[in-house]
Length: 439
Image 1 (tube, rainbow, N blue to C red):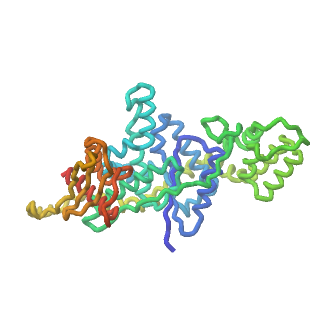
Image 2: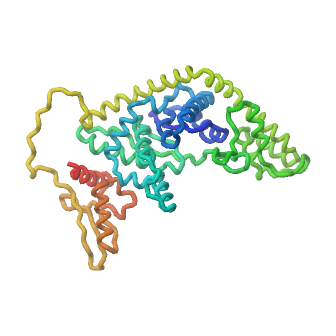
Image 3: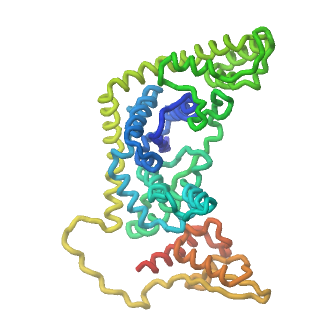
């Protein structure tokens, strides 16, 4: 049976709540137990530095998140569980990838564009408050994924672009440095969209979120805090004995996230029959506490013994580095960062006539008055054909982008492949132009 590698990162900037547990933690741990799956879970503490400059908060969050995942059933013997900052190969790979990533591609990253657009709307400098951490965030994320050649990365829709960027960077590196050895260093990862992830309502009925201050604590504060939070769930004013509408209450949604189908059906029927909200909240507390109380005991034990947490994470780091170190050694060799040995004899320079002819862009104007361009191979075949442009300048700008950014600029480009030309041949032609310009 083939093995699928799945990688999940957890940013260390907060304390998990009930919504995190139902929407992310519980399903991810269940998925890690499937046959044929090799799971990598990491605390994304380098990513946390982009958002947070409070060292105490980062330190506390790393401990709480590690304890939460382990208490919830993550098995460090079955999965690889580590802190991002314990893997020195990751920042080194980030730099190797940075050196083959087009700046234009980073300019189009959603997080940077959102910050730049907000600055422009406020009349400020485009890059006001933008750090290089925010700007280069997608490259660090690509290194996280490619370091372990993950096949699948579960993400929300807002993260799809980052997976696409990781694929582009991996493909470019493979093309530039893998050709000589006939090796593709990186697997092209796929985004797994979590369409079925449960989104729990908070105390006020909106999505449970720290930004709304409407969360139900998972472990923090113990059963007392859990019970008090449940007591604050907003309900209507109907009295005991009056029928309630189960579909209009956040309390029912929370109940169903922990109940069996039979329990959920019975609970709904009792509400329609007049079950009071106070009793309903008590039942919700008992249901949730029955599931998380054993986990809470484990969580509190881990928090009280940080040395045990540290040992588990360091063991996970050693396990992760056993995979990362050999790959990075091969990457260093591929780019020329090799041990000093007997200097290789320089090959005689090839005559210019022996160099492989590069593809060329041709711009032209048709009888209809519109402007076009095409990319032609050395043998005259048309590799790419553009759509029509009203002006030559716009056509020229696209040619410039394709020459400087290579295959990364294809997404959204107004072009179609030539007849019988595959995507790989087009990408190789464009990247060859980029490489030739860099010589």
